[in-house]
Amino acid sequence: MSLKPFYPVAIPILNGNEKKYVMDCMDSTWISSNGSYISRFEQAFADFSNAKHAISINNGTSALHLSLLAHDITEDCEIIVPTLTFVATANAVRYCGAKPIFVDCDPYTWNIDPTLIEKKITNRTRGIIVVHLYGNPCDMDPIYKVAKKHGLFIIEDAAEAIGAEFNGKLTGTLGDIAAFSLFGNKIITTGEGGMITTNDDSLAEKVRILKGQGMDSNKRYWHPIIGYNYRMTNIQAAIGLAQIENVHWHVTRRIEVGNLYLKYLRKENRLILPTTKPDVTNVFWMFSVVLKKGGEKERNNLMAYLLSKGIETRPFFYPIHKLPPYMPGQNTNEYPNATSISERGINLPSHAGLSEEDIQYLCQCVQEGLDLLGS
Ligand SMILES: *Cc1c(COP(=O)(O)O)cnc(C)c1O
Image 1: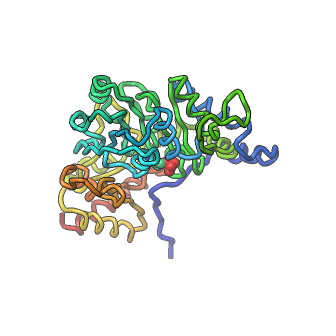
Image 2: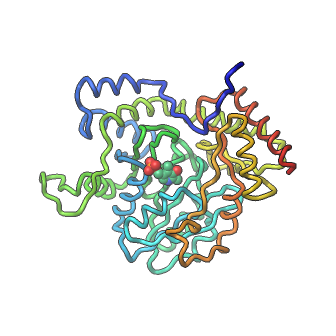
Image 3: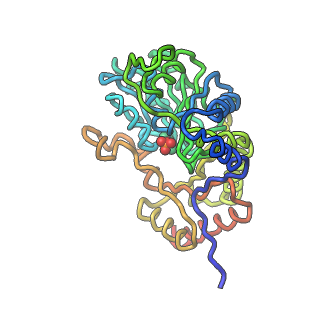
């Protein structure tokens, strides 16, 4: 009897200097948030992103929180966010006491629909968080236009999109400041971890102070503001440095996996495949499909069938306006695209370790599942 293969949605791939650098931390005893790997990782991340500053953070959610705090976001502010994203995007706004104002998504890219932003702007609106969902960069030009017209800042939630490009420019430099996640299932990882990139010296300085308990950078134990302990450890940075040394490989493999899925599912007219605009590079953090017909039940049936074949999948995020802490006061009919796409969307196994044979098999199982559904 042969063991049935199992295909997880995501696995971290630690095929570079990760172990060597971690052992170096152990041998040197530099295991907390001081140590040379922190600055080496930050420098390498900044070099890769073409950003002036890269600041390591303990996770992606904290990176979003500090990106908002660096813009002095408080209780009376409103921040525009897409409703179809991971909950952390909106939670970070609430951590500041501010109000996330949700916007529906584009039916094809699944990213924030730029044409719906302007009508949500009030005299309290301070900024927009764009999320490059599942590795597909947002259509930035119309977002720049509306942000400029109303004097709003742009934060990129680039948690899922390291290496992705819009008009030849990498994520991390497409707005005023960007938050990356380095969680274990992201394109590169430090286990738990995050990074902030910006070209703005004053935002960078504020972030550095906020992440280290608000301590004055010239006067030890003098804390002019309330800060946080959002630091990354040298051990995490050691893993991160090894990962970023191989970032081109990690990103290229994701793109290859995405393109192979597109190749084998191209003729599958029961699915909506990811739409990538011509001026962007999608890095396919999660290769995702949306059922053309049916709803949540059919989607869940397909996922159950795939699981029976040893294939792990994930449902799309629930639109945040439907989650209990965010639902009060919402008009739930207001976000038809996000609602419908969320119910019919599936993330397929998408990590860098998948071969062409794996993807052929995965696509064959998806099609068998669709046949059984009779859709
Ligand atoms: C993963 C993720 C985050 C949060 O990152 P953590 O490192 O898990 O805190 C935020 N936004 C999006 C879109 C994500 O996918």
